[in-house]
Length: 193
Length: 47
Image (cartoon, rainbow over all chains, first blue to last red):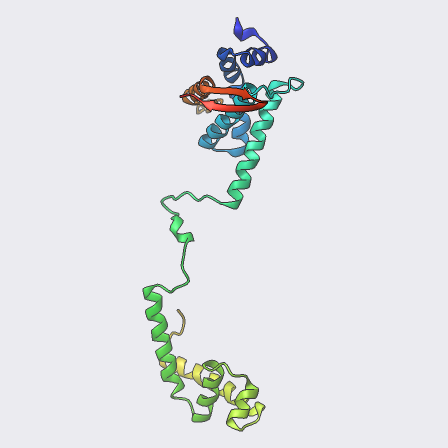
């Protein structure tokens, strides 16, 4: 009997305290609303959550007597669901959620700036290899290379400090690098981390 | 004659909210009381 009543009548009945009316309304629009939400979010659990939130809002609005009877019930409910879906996507864009799976670990996204123990060892090895090879270079090239790389001096500063022209300093740097490369190749040293 | 093997197509189940979700909403509705005092509406949940 109550099943045959129109939405607008059921809404009125519910606002007048008939709890059975909301039950009929929920069952009547369940599939339609769930389908609508699911088509937007594509997730069963999330659909359930948004469905629940939608009807909680509907119930609160009706109980407060704040429902505007001019509109139709279902489009109004769909609009609430639509707004909740938008809220969800806004929130998830700000805070993207990652689910851990067998092939994907959420911790792979989190890293710290520090090198891990293995990388640290490799870095130390590279540094000591490089220092050893720099010592093999002729004195003048060694001097320019150390000033440029370790003291981060400009070629102008290097020329002032060593008493040679900028062009000579540049030339020494160039030869230092060429010789270093030769040493790396000759000793088959890997200088990458 | 060539046999036509046909697999049963998946029936498209319509999605609908779980009965427990609906039960939760009905209980929520029953427990929610709105009282008005001096023009202000107060919501209370009487569980």
